[in-house]
Length: 68
Image (tube, rainbow, N blue to C red; front, side):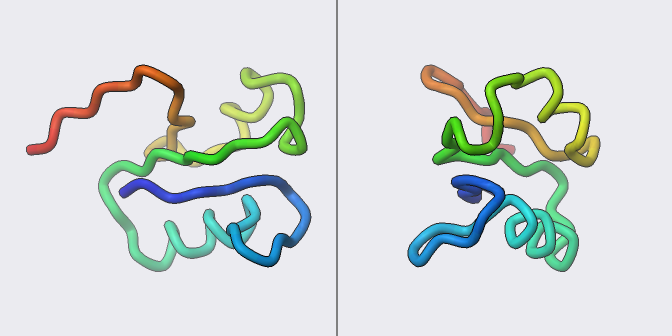
């Protein structure tokens, strides 16, 4: 699954991190990649990664996904 999570605060046209994680928990995909990440999620990618479930990853420019 690929989903956006712009920031921690609510936004009128994007999901925030809490909303994205809630939807991921409801749909239970095998893997999820979060896109449209803003600096408003924090400047430490390593800290953010530690807060995510084991099957949720941060997408990045140049990422190549193999579809099974």
